[in-house]
Image (cartoon, rainbow, N blue to C red; front, side, top):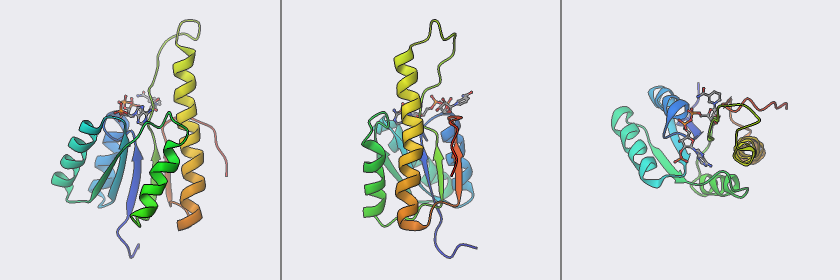
Length: 145
Ligand SMILES: NC(=O)c1ccc[n+]([C@@H]2O[C@H](COP(=O)([O-])OP(=O)(O)OC[C@H]3O[C@@H](n4cnc5c(N)ncnc54)[C@H](OP(=O)(O)O)[C@@H]3O)[C@@H](O)[C@H]2O)c1
């Protein structure tokens, strides 16, 4: 049993899979750090989660397609003294279609954000905390530790 308030970092928490997982973690009494690009939707999501589940929610507006973004998110978490117990590496954009017609640059940005988000958060968070206890990765990126 944890003797501190548990916290989950959820990227892409304003919509779809990430939003549903935010509900699940909040229902389990995790405080949340939520990340997406749209500040207004982030604030709205944070407000709903606080109101519905009574948990603390820190919204961080960040474009995880930028390579520095995971470090900036980590810095903010560190500076606020938040310990992360669970990571949901989920931000990204699905694209459906045939490789011959879909936008390869968009796919490259998506996979880069997914992979490097996971890689950076994995490296940064355990360095301070001993590592999140739970991981969820929406990307289907293969990874081993
Ligand atoms: N749905 C599926 O069937 C399926 C299957 C396998 C894998 N996935 C993967 O699961 C993830 C979520 O899928 P979904 O269908 O739930 O997507 P979604 O409803 O479109 O939600 C995507 C979330 O990610 C955020 N986001 C997107 N690009 C971002 C960026 N560059 N930086 C920060 N946040 C970003 C979005 O907010 P903002 O737009 O405000 O940034 C939103 O909160 C995606 O990575 C997708 O590829 C989905």
